[in-house]
Image 1 (tube, helix red, strand yellow):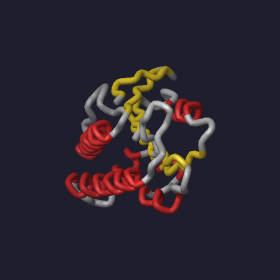
Image 2 (cartoon, rainbow, N blue to C red):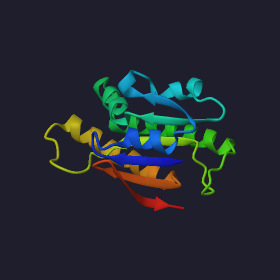
Image 3 (cartoon, rainbow, N blue to C red):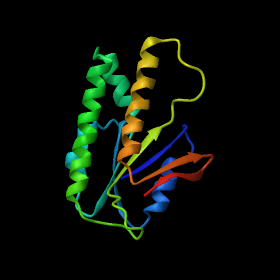
Image 4 (cartoon, rainbow, N blue to C red):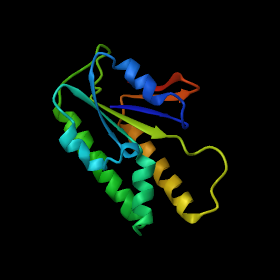
Length: 154
């Protein structure tokens, strides 16, 4: 798995499109009004699954009244299902890494801490799921002003 993180409009999508220009990318994006479970139908053989918009999925659940723990559990279950499915696939890239899944995650841990408890809860959950994704990833890229910085590589 590959995790690409960074601030808003830092070039994460562009980087992924350029990196995998010769592969089919299946995008599951909250920004396109996709639900996170849509990956099951959308991820086809020989394609790379790209999931983005985690903060919107988390915020939606919180606004529906779910507790922090319920949202964390829900997101963790989705991520674990994706990890298990990736393990079933055998493609290995030229670096010897399995990169069938790409998570794009917005970096929210910098700057001013929100006053609203709901905003703080979302930020906390996003931070925890980003940690989970980073641990599960073969490679983690931090994007800053369109420049990729490798912060983890196996």
